[in-house]
Length: 548
Image (tube, rainbow, N blue to C red; front, top):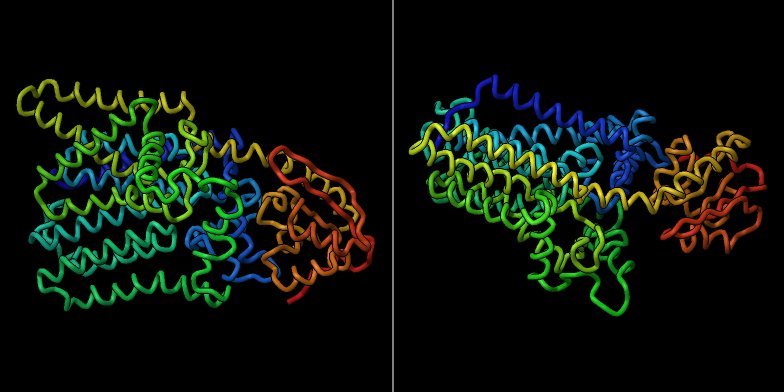
């Protein structure tokens, strides 16, 4: 089933077409003001910016829950204030991850399939409207999908190198791509996945245990490359736990702290019932994740058919490939058991408009199944085209064209029905838009009378308010400033020129406890959001930022 190497012309055509799709999607998002629709995307940009733009700059600003790699990759781009404010900073790492994911998807398919079938798999992956939208934002899914694909690509190549003197993919000897070098590449991409999403922790565990077992059976556990790379893989999650312990006093803060998924669910769950569908019910959780995966990649009633087609294609690949290397592609199906467990027991809800509670939440998680479904679709095309080549070769091009037409039709129907992930992002911003439009002009007008005035505000709820006002984060006193923030809460009027409070937050409580010197200027209300209040300080010295 080996189809030979990829030519330079193939690579250039693949990257050019995918780059054109990425640029077109970015232009659309820019024109439709969609780069910052997701509150999480805004928060990722905000975290990256505060690493250097704060009263306490440094890696401690990475926070305790979200893993650090996406924010570190954003760092060079948020240095430019306008890119941070308009969301363009998020496009660069996400679009590059999308292109790398496309390249990896094609390389993986090309190992076992010809150009036409591999192009089917790539087209299905690269033209997915939901993925094309997310790669224009600062969300972490495009990066993790890329890491997952390349982990599987290199695992397959590594295993092929164990099973034969020649590499299945290139058909040449392996002096330049030795087992040791591939182990290091696998370790590096697994570490990147560990520092991107918690899904990566399970993927790294299964991958590295599998490598160890394969080497054990061959008596290769004395490999220096394996043990040294093992240190790197094990050190990654340990480093995150140590960071949490040093920075926040609890090595499992990301799991049980005040900003963890479990804590957020406790604060937001409606009383008197299960927090979300699938809570402590793995079967319902499995159904929700499979359903959202289908809705992310296929239109309407095509979802079940696509899942069956891809699963049959994957099974066909296993029968024809007949190599242990192919088994590593099963890692692409890992999101199914991972999210079935996470939704049931990990405080990770998924809401779908089709099922109760008929809402949109975490719908993007289903995109992690896109690489597996795309490869399965390509393998299904391989089954059909292989049969036609043997019995009706004249029909091969026609059948390939049918597959591409079906992919185009599916993409068009997904767009017509409105991509699920984009709809969630749009609804996400609808609840914030009114406040983001009203508060920044009011703050700018007051700051014009108080140049350099410090603003006491919570930036974790509406981080865009700072960027839209046109001031650096360092001109605010916010929850990430720790002792400076606590001092300001004790006496707001003495530490800030402006105070922005929202009903129920700790700043509103501080204003209620210490109102002296503060004058209410304006109130802001928006449906589904806590009301805001903007105060000015009548005391002197409130325009001096704190010093370290």
